Amino acid sequence: MRLKSHHKVTLTLGLTVAVILTAVYFYLDNNLKNYTYKRIRTDLNHEVSLIKSYLEQIQGPVDFDKIADQLGHDISARVTIISSDGVVQGDSMFDGEALHGLENHLSRPEVQDALMNKRGESRRYSHSTKEDMLYVAVPFGPTENSNIIRLSLPLADIAHISDHLKKFLWLGLWLSFLFALLISHLASRMITRPIARISSIAQAIAGGDFSQKISLWQDDEINDLAKAINFMSEHIRTRIEEVTTAKSRLEAVFLSMIEGVMVVNSEGKILLINETLKKILHVEHEALGRKPLEVIRNIEVQEIVGDVLQSRQGVKVREMSFFFPEERILRVHAAPVLREGKADGVVLVFHDITDLRRLETIRKDFVANVSHEFRTPVANIKGYSETLLDGALNDKEHALEFLKIIYSESDRLAKLVDDLLKLARLESGRSDLDLKPCSIAKILDWVLAGLNIQAKQQEVKIVTQIPEDIAQIKADDSSLSQILFNLIENAIKYNKPGGQVTVSAREQDRWIEVSIADNGIGISADDLPRVFERFYRVDKAHSREIGGTGLGLSIVKHIIQSHNGDITAQSELGMGSVFCFTLPKA
Ligand code: ADP
Image (cartoon, rainbow, N blue to C red; front, side, top):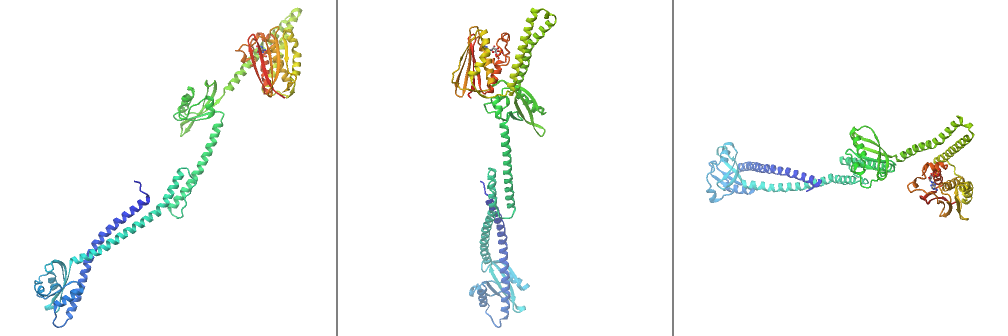
C-alpha cells in the first residue's frame, strides 16, 4: 500500500506520542499510588497530632468513645483511643458491646511504637475490621500514664482514591494524544503540501510541460528547493530549444546535401541515412538498425566500415561502382566518429562522380578521335608534299594530281577545324545567339541554293512542303541555316541516285516542327541512337570519302538545344531516314 507522506509523518508522530504517553502513564500511575499513600499518611500524621493536642487540652472526666465517634465522623477515618495498658477506650467504628469485645491492643505494632518512640505507624491486616489498614498512633496525656490516640484508614480507600485520580490521568493522556495527533496532522500537512505541489510540477516538467512554475510564499528550505526547480525547468527549456534548433538546422543541412550521407554506430549498424543516398542507391526499405550490406548490395561499403572501426585511423577514401538501379561510380569518404579515443561509429559521405568519370572518358575519347581525324589528312599532306619535293614536282601529270590531293586534304582539315571550333563554341555556351523572327521558307531557299549542285551531282531531287502562311521561327538565322544545311546535306550524301529529299514544316502549339526525310541508305537500329555523338559515323570510310567529319549532327543537336528545341531521328536501313526538329515560334 502506498502511504502519502503526510500520513507517514502523522503516523510516526502519533506513534511517538502514544509511546511517550504510555510511558508517562505507567510512570505517573506508579508515582500516583505512592504519592496518594504518602499524602494520606502525612494527613493522618497531622490529624493525629492535632487530635493529640485537642485531647491534652480537655479537662476533667471524658467519654473517650464519644470523642472517638465525633472525631471519626469529622475526619472520615477510624479513630481509636487506647489506654496505656492496651484496653480500647473508644473507637469510632465500635460502640457498646462491640467496643468492650475488642481485644487488648497493647501488642499492636503501632501502639508499641507509639509508647516507645512517641509515634507509631503500621500497615497491616486488621483483625477488628477484617481488612488491610494504615495505622498512625501517638501517646497523649501525662508521660507516666499516657493513653494512645490511633487513626487508621483502610488501604482500600487509598487505592480507591488513586483509582479515581488514575481515571483523570487516563482521560488527560487520551486528550493529549488526540490533540498531539491533530497537531501533528496539521503540521505534516503544512510541510508536505508544498512538497506535493513541487512533485506535481516536477512531473509536468518531466512530461515536457515547462509552462508551470512553483509559487511558494514561505522563506524556508522548501522554498529554496522550489526556486531551484523553477531555475532548472527554465534552464532545461532553454537547452531543449537550443538542441531542437541545432537539430533542425542539422537535419536541414543533412536533407539538402547533394552528397549521400550515412552514419553507422560502433556495431556497424545504420543510425542515419539521408534521402539523397536512398535515391542514388535505390534504398526503399527501412535502413535504420540494419547493416549496410543488408541495405546496399555492395560488399565494399561494409568493408570500409569495418576497416575504419578497426583501424580508428583518419579518413579512408575509396571509389566504388554500383550497378543498381543503374551504373554509378561513387567516391566514398569514411571517417571515424571518435569518442574517448575509440571509434564509436563511422560517417560515410558518398560523392556521385559518375558524370565526372563519364566526362573524363568523353574528353579522352574526344582527344583520341581528334588526333585520329587529323592524323590521316596531315599524313597525306606531308607524304605528297615530300614526294613533290623529292622531284615529283617535275612530273607535271602526277604533280597536279598530288597537289589536288594536298588541296582536298587541307580542305578537309579546314572543315574539321571549322566544325571543331563551332562545337567548342556551342559547348562552352559562348555562341552568341541573335534570336529574332526568321522565315523558314527564306532560309531554306538560301540553303538549297548552296546545295543544289551537290544534289544534282548525286541525282537527288529536293522537294519542299512549307505552308505559305506558316508562323515565323524565333531563332538565330545563321544557326538555323546551319541546322538545315547539315541535315539536308546528310540526306543528299547518304542517298541513292534517283533518291528524294523532302523538307516539310508545320506548326504544333507554340512550336514549328521541321522534318527532313530521305529515301536513302538509312541507318540501322543499332547505330541510330549514336549518330548524334561526336565523330560517330556509321561507315567511316564512306563518310570520309564524301567529306564528312562526323561532327555535323552533334553541331545540329547542340544548336537546337541552345534554342530550347528538340531533335529526333527515325530510320530504317535501306529505306531512308527522317530527322525531325522543333524550334519555338516567334
Ligand atoms: P558526317 O560528317 O559523317 O556526315 P554527321 O554527324 O553529319 O557526320 O553524321 C553522322 C553519321 O550519321 C554519318 O556518318 C552517317 O553515317 C549517319 N547519317 C547522318 N545522316 C544520315 C542520313 N540522312 N541517312 C543515313 N545516314 C545518315
